[in-house]
Length: 194
Image 1 (cartoon, helix red, strand yellow):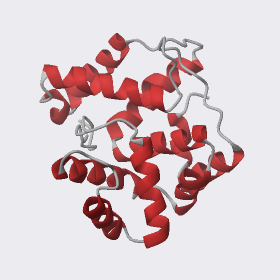
Image 2 (cartoon, rainbow, N blue to C red):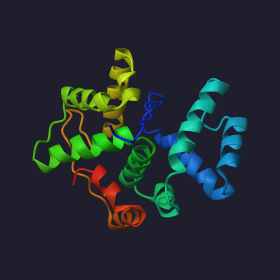
Image 3 (cartoon, rainbow, N blue to C red):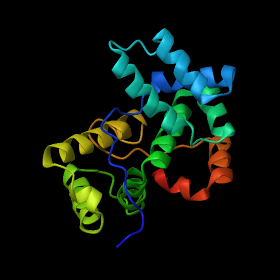
């Protein structure tokens, strides 16, 4: 049995592009994630309908962005949109080991085999394989399983790693982003189909 315990709480949202950029910009100004959270909630900077929604989304965004290095945050702040999307995918994979493993074990492996179509049954097979070794995965309700799959595929689309027809898009990391990830941890380069 694996020692890694998966967090399966990624049904809250997808990449959260706009919310992440707002939060990262505030962090550049304030230098403190608690201050960022407080300001976002107090001023409803994410333009959420309810206070609970605002709290939930800002908690999710900050939990991801806190895992990025200062250089990765800098690229998120001033990079081209595809770089920003890749950084947000990186943040998701850092936050959720389950998604990281899916990216490495399924997405990248398919790409390396020149098999460029990612289909739902492949995600389902991956999910079931992980459920055999991880009670936290096994406990996920069937209705939630479908939602998790939908979220992962939507994140891949938003990260520009999967086309609308679910064909894998090769990641074109800029040298700056490649180097930033390599300095952080070269293992994270494997989350990108390249």
